[in-house]
Image (cartoon, rainbow, N blue to C red):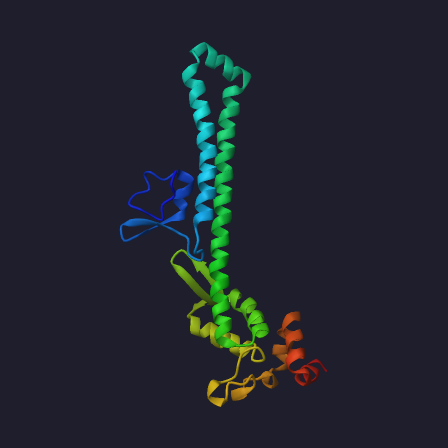
Length: 221
């Protein structure tokens, strides 16, 4: 089977592949957001479908070539059941592989958005890497696109950016109107409270110690 990015109807799409399509403007489109080159995915799915088709054709050939008595004898020996089980196992494998591909697509989309948000907050590569990890906690990939949540409450993208700047001021760049420095606009590491310091993870504390050892000693003392 040739996997098409867009089809008019799902009638010609194998059952385990239908979950990969979403309806849009009267057509069905393959969900591949986050992956630019879908050739490897298409090749793998075609390979798996080919294996399933082969097992199915073997079972049909057995049914067609045997007389009723021969088929009954084959069933008693377990040959027919063996082919049926092989087909079902191949189908289960396809479904599991497809679920794995969808998970990779979702993770790629989420990581990409978290990286973009981190890049908007800091031009420093090391700081942006830490911010990417934190930003990913507030992003979800839904069927209708990206969603943002803080404490289980849906918010817009701007609120997540504001939250990250307030929670990790030592990682985010300062107010650009004040020169764009890391401590500009009163949002630098020196403004971290004891409560914020206690809530930090090991990576955040290591970053603070590296970028502002004086503040680290003050808060850790």
